[in-house]
Image 1: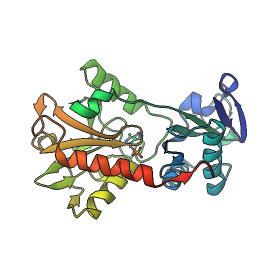
Image 2 (image 1 turned 45 degrees about the vertical axis):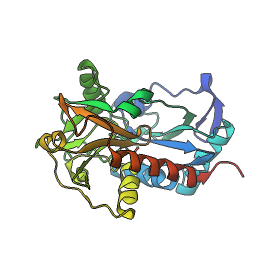
Image 3 (image 1 turned 120 degrees about the vertical axis):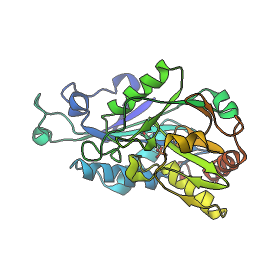
Length: 290
Ligand code: PMP
């Protein structure tokens, strides 16, 4: 595998960064998870837009421009002969001193890894997933805004450990007010009486690119989509529930905190939206090859 680091491509074994990089020392940096389907990078512009938005929020200057970064992602896929895969794009604050002040970090590093991912076992997509609400709540906006896709993912990691300890693949994360925010690496949706609901971004969700894509697909097909505050009660009493994410795609959820959701099987709306999402991944994206 060839990894892009700071404008150069190097072999996987040689792809290393300094122990003085503040990305390692403090989780000071940002990232994106992107997918390629059928020789095209899906929603690349949206991912790069979000990366620049995260950078702005943490006062990090990405050393290359938007178009150049898009081209670098495509080139990394090409060098790895990737047609289907998962791309991890990171920008770290760069090498600095041991103190946390980033003012001595002069060269943020841009890293692009193009590989593969299988987040959840295949049968989860057929049978549906079991979720558990975990004690770790989502970060506060006023502390570390969950809209920033930062390299400091400990909030999510802790919630993931708690879900695993309860025998579940994913965690429902509530915000400090007790409203549903999202899962550790996915946004959450419910279907009730033919309408689609997902927590508002202000509840502490990431501005999910899959979330927005699914909203657009649903609206286009005439569905009513709203973003109200949701409680666990709303999840338990939904007709259907599913998760969205670049890595996860569309995952049906059939049980939450021991309550069977709907029929206990992946629902028809979930299946339709998932099929339409996959159709879109086949029909669009930034071409990797001529
Ligand atoms: N929430 C969190 C916390 C995430 O890390 C992610 C991305 N893995 C998502 C939601 C889904 O976002 P996207 O659809 O843009 O991948």
